[in-house]
Length: 132
Image 1 (cartoon, rainbow, N blue to C red):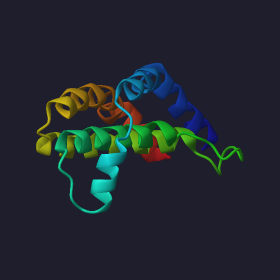
Image 2 (cartoon, rainbow, N blue to C red):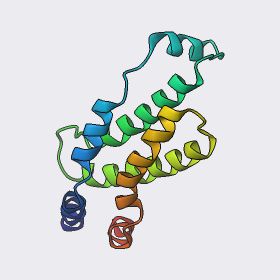
Image 3 (cartoon, rainbow, N blue to C red):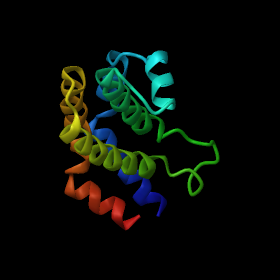
């Protein structure tokens, strides 16, 4: 099982999506406190800012999923966690792209989906993760 997990990590690293995703995260505007306050109160006027924050949050979930607790293999399956986060992020972004109306978020979503799609559409990677 450890060999399969290491192989999965090598396959993900060969695809090389982490650096482009980190670069995209840096290019997305930071959270807007006014919009966060409005969201907490269940009323938001700035739809564009809310959509951009949703894209940023999904991207953060993907990038921070591979962080390890430091206990090592079988306790922290960081490659498998990253794979699962990419699959979920791609699905969530697909859902959001159908509903997004703002021009900023409509620009970010395809860029992020292009990278997460490299994982989500790779059949050999999916098969390797399924065996884990």
